[in-house]
Length: 234
Image (cartoon, helix red, strand yellow):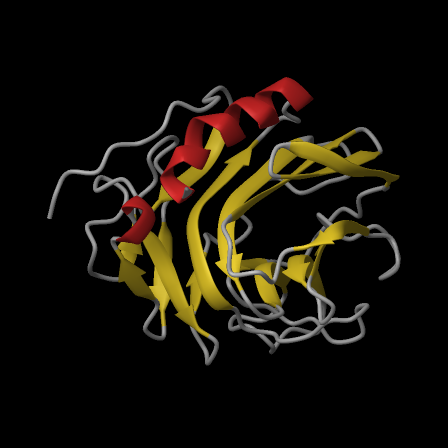
């Protein structure tokens, strides 16, 4: 397999970064995606696939595939800023980033479908629990078009901002709940019952990378990351 190389992205304060296009992160086979920055990786569960198209991405069949991120991998409290970013492609509804108390998706007594494509094809974000299932952002554009999109969410103080393809589409006020119980994080799956237009729990489609920062990126940095990677998906 050719040695795939990573894009130039904002790298300051990255806690977790996995990328299927970079052979150091994922070789194209196996159950582990290694972290490119920060040393934290992730585990492929139930047959998550891989394709070399668009320089490499993880493939989800809509059945029970998911990628398990490290348990409670960051200090989730009311005052911790962060940024979540990932590239995805789908033609259906489905979870992109799930958070719950269940060891496996769908088993938790507490859950937040942090980023998902809803039953109307819109992307919804709530990173993470803000006291109500209605305190979330929803895109005006549909993303169930089988075209690659980047979704990014930043949080700082009480400001929760959501970006689609490098452009801010919503800002909401959110007071983060501090967690005491262990929470589990999943790419491509997660419990979504009772949330608006929840749709499918498991993704049918592709996710190529996932980046988590311990700070809120600026709008210009979000746009920089988008422009640095969009060439893979043309």
